Image 1 (tube, rainbow, N blue to C red):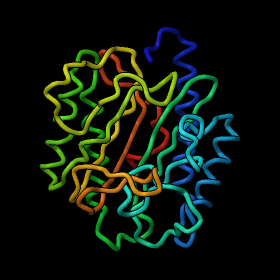
Image 2: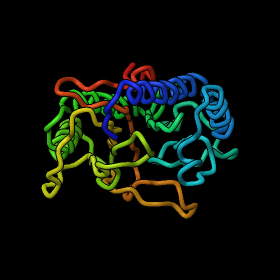
Image 3: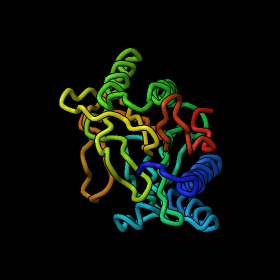
Length: 254
């Protein structure tokens, strides 16, 4: 969507704060031995207390309030009872929701407890690359150039990107134009970011895979060549200068 009034901006600020606060609290609440369903129910209760409704449930009838992916899962992981967290797990939580007709999206990967699998550098690279990408976004910038930046920075860090997952427009629904804010360069995409538009920018930084494949459960995405993927995501408002990070309180860069 494009912000055209102070009321619309306030609406986007409120839902963005709701999903960001939920993500932050879920990350802090996660402990070894907890099930993904327990963490998801915790997050669902926070959203409900803030008056927000789970976007994946509303839009896709997803079997959970949030998406929780662990270790080799990339995204859309099911928050089930048999998914039990262990020390050193790479966990990704993606929280998106609706409030008063406005929608926002954010996510982040983190290591639970001790970094047994030595994946903190991957997580850090994802965070740093997202920050660099967002800092380059303003009205008139080519979307393809941001994809090129993400891919180039990933390669410099010794990693790959997932090429078939993307950031997207958001605001009046979960996924809006532009739909293809890729993590790689697409020379055929001549679309530019527009001032006052709302977009969800996300990284998918990988150790081995370059494409995401869907599991038999119909939801969970895993890498085509295995390995691990870290994802970080903010909902932002594009301006003529530095973007406004609407989900900043999630503290995913901390």
